[in-house]
Each structure stands twice: as C-alpha cells, then as structure tokens.
Image 1 (cartoon, helix red, strand yellow):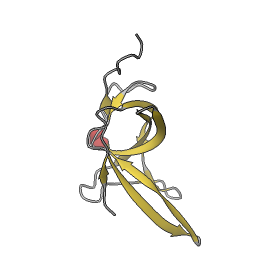
Image 2: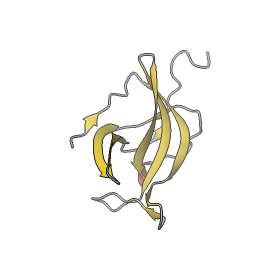
Image 3: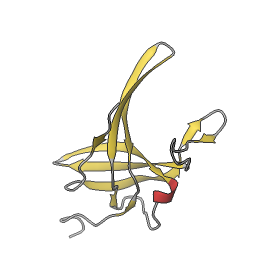
Length: 116
C-alpha cells in the first residue's frame, strides 16, 4: 500500500512512551529490522495534536534515528513522518489500521503558548 506523508509543521507532538526495541516475534523476542538496511527498529508513543484534535499513535524509527535528550512529556520532532494503511486476516478475523514511521525522533521546540 502507498505511504502518505504527514504534515507536522503546525502540529504539537509530545513523547508519551520512550523508544524501545520493536519486537517482531513475541514468542522468540526477535527484534524487528528494516527490510532494506537491516538496522534494528525502535517503537515509541506520542500524542499528535493538530487543529484542536489529538491522537495517541505509535511510531517506528530506525535505531540510529533516536536522538539523545528525549524526555517523557516533552515536545519532539518526527522528520519524514509517513502513515501507511494496512490490513490482514488473523485467525479468520480481518484486521486493519495505520502504521506510522519516521526517519528520526529528536527533541522539539516548545510550542507557542505552552509554559507561558
């Protein structure tokens, strides 16, 4: 399926879950790797606030894209954020959702009006 670029220019993005290795197989503990580079992938949680609406989302980033200085509750930037719709059938039940991926996660600027 096609990826959709997510415009983050007017959004406030706050870190809600620290980056941790993304597990590919829960039974074996195998860590997910990028299909092209083979690099380990990390998963983190953020609240994405834009135009008065908010969503809690999980974002995948390559391990090398995780910056130092990240703090829970603090603003972050997600350069190259894309959304990719997915669907699958598991045990006869159809499932679907949206997977989010970014090139990196880094500390972001405090949005105007917060902390003032």
